[in-house]
Amino acid sequence: MFDTPWLYNLGKVIHFIGLISWFAALFYLPRLFIYHTEALERPEAERGVLTEQYAIMQRRLYHIIMTPAMFITFFGGSMMLIYYGWDWFVANIWMHWKLGFIVLLVWYHYYSKGIMQRLARNEFVMSSAKFRMYNEIATLLLLAIVLLAVYKSRTDFLIAFLSLIAFGISLMIGIKAYKRYREQKGEV
Image (cartoon, rainbow, N blue to C red; front, side):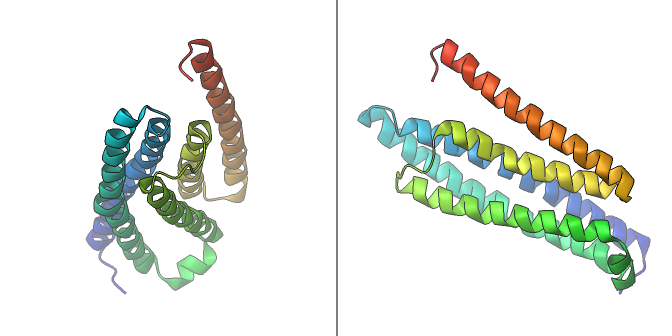
């Protein structure tokens, strides 16, 4: 549709700015879920103030930063795809996989909205430990998307994918070690 490199570069800039903002929010929202869940266990006087504040923070983060950033990311990415064209898209299977991971990321985005709405009603959704694991889903999806964007060949991607699995296992071990550490210090 357009073949001007500066428009492609503009699309890339828009994509990166949206991506960074979107992921910042995707990483922070589950942290707020953790704090909200832990606040539900506080005495009534504290609980009401904390849960109300966390619900406001979650709602603002989701509606003012996270969702607009997602659409900005899509807009910039679409500009780049249009620049490359349909033939390029069909020939580059890695992009199909990347878009598949992006679909999962969008599901995560909207699933988080449902969690946010339930927490706003002070419903118990899951333990703070499970929210810590939930928080890492966005990290793993980001890693998969970046690895696909960098390592486009099958061999390189396979190596990168195995690295992703190793990273995920390391992450789970780290989460469990941190939980044990908090239990030993009496913080849980």
